[in-house]
Image (cartoon, rainbow, N blue to C red; front, top):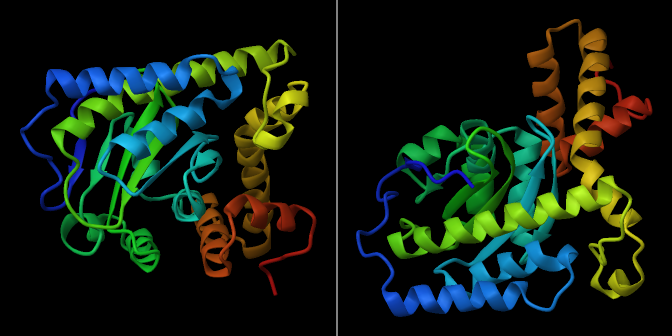
Length: 273
């Protein structure tokens, strides 16, 4: 995971100068080891994400894969609010998560109620506050050059992510990245990965469910691209305006941009009326 200088937005987003002590590092290392040990690979990202929720000063978390601007798939979320935050950013094509993917660097929004953070993502910030969320911290998953997704942490109270929590988030993100790559490689080879998004079905999953999920981000990107072209023709506008209309409609309806794109492709929805 990219571990360069974070993009700190807003007042107080830089975190404290107090890093983790030796005992805390050992505690977190044990927690990561416990999350990894004696479990199938398919549930590893979820367990690592849950470890972040349990150990860090945050309210919830999610892991998502990116399929390109404005598209993606949520792998796991600790609660409905975490899932809604991720989906809102994909629908809007904006927010800390989207910025982290684009910059391939952590993006820290310590206060979405005012200041730089609220001005940088005004619509997303409003949606976050409606969900009783005041701070969002997004860490890219992948290499120094390419982000394949994000580890997103949120908190109901405003304030920076401490240096201690930053130090823990980086190795957790690295472990999640490694797990995602292993699962994707296994699915590409058609090998069983031992799980699915539904824990109740994990023991009998043959790997096809996981492979389908891993295709979701790419498929969603293609659908949005195709629907954007259709809206361009309907409204006689450029691609940027067409995509903006898709996103605006999705946000107003409380849906994802991929869902709206599918309706456009199926001709259930047109923008020329």
